[in-house]
Length: 436
Ligand code: SDX
Image (cartoon, rainbow, N blue to C red; front, side, top):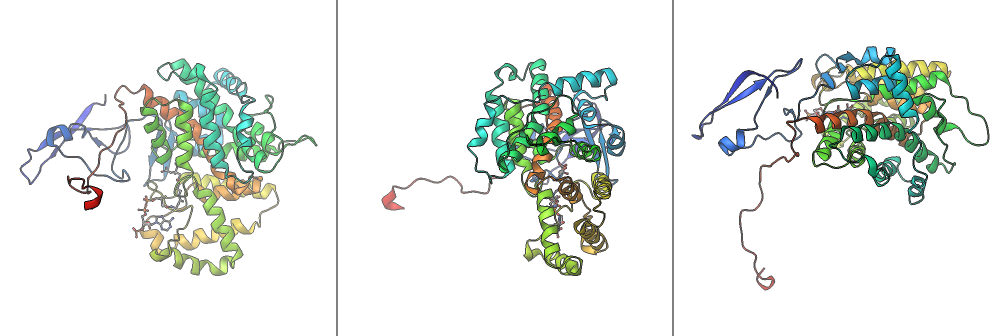
């Protein structure tokens, strides 16, 4: 239970007695007003569609300061983690609360490595999909199907079961994403290799084939690993809230992660990286930098329904720190691949410059978010555009699991069941069909 640091008094002009409510302070960030007694005491609900001013839980995992453009995983700045750690160290941090020492890291990596294979019958699920199925449709189906294979780790009240499920999910998501890719291009599935790093093994399963030796490119592996780190967690975003809400009913972890994947798919959320790259490619095809002014005018015209994908954020009202790191990674990868003059990267930077000098974006505090550059670097690495969000889901599974586990362990947690402002028909009587 949080300590009471202050009080808020809510008074009404309709004669309802005023109500005093506790106010809690976090370690950093906004205070919260505990309104749980409001309905019982006043018969009134709060109203906050989209949860603009609502804290749905208390958490110790990730902190975002939208005004400063700051992102901390368990207190560590994302900029430091992206440079000094690899993805499995960050996974250990998000899940256990501390960065691992070498012995703890070796044990964690060994655990994950030995769970990267999926049950051989999983491959049969793929046969049911069209080859041109969207990878996220396949991921929702196959991750949910994992719960059909692991009856020995579905008791969410058992911490050991939760840990086994967590390791299985972190370990098997890359295998399933790579299988999804291989299925869409008609190549055979590639088994994981235990002698490779997490990101190296993913690149191996994605790009190697039985006909020739495949050597992972260390620079691309490092870039992939950094992309995983930047997408690992992000406080109570839409898909994380979906995972928490699903978990609050007692659903098993595989079902909860599948629900998170479904939510992440939307273009306003994780689907933005695919939408952003498609937007840049369309811009490139229709005149490139010469047409930026025309495109920005369309974005500013509400009737056009056109948004600048990869821009704007519910929390960041400053530059998303992940976008900065992603742009640097973009630069490094394009340099190594001899694509410094990649027209799409140059177009993205030109478009960013035009937008950030335009009052429409400045006044609305719209800056590039994590999705703005991630598509360019993934395309350069060789990841097909429709797979971008599946890779986002792969990385975010670590954060979803950490948040899900925190929710299950939270003594204050109850099943999530919001109420509503009812604006429908008042009570009325059904007439026989002859009288309707
Ligand atoms: C992710 O929540 C998270 O943490 C998510 C995420 C994570 O790691 O989990 O960070 C990942 O989802 C990043 C966001 C990816 N989505 C996109 O890039 C899609 C484009 N962005 C927008 O759809 C939008 O910015 C949202 C959905 C991201 C945020 O929407 P909000 O907070 O509800 O803001 P809003 O829609 O109320 O916008 C405020 C104003 C509006 O104009 P007015 O009505 O005030 O005149 O800004 C405008 C919007 O029309 N606006 C945009 C815009 N985003 C907002 N105008 C043009 N292009 C945009 N991208």
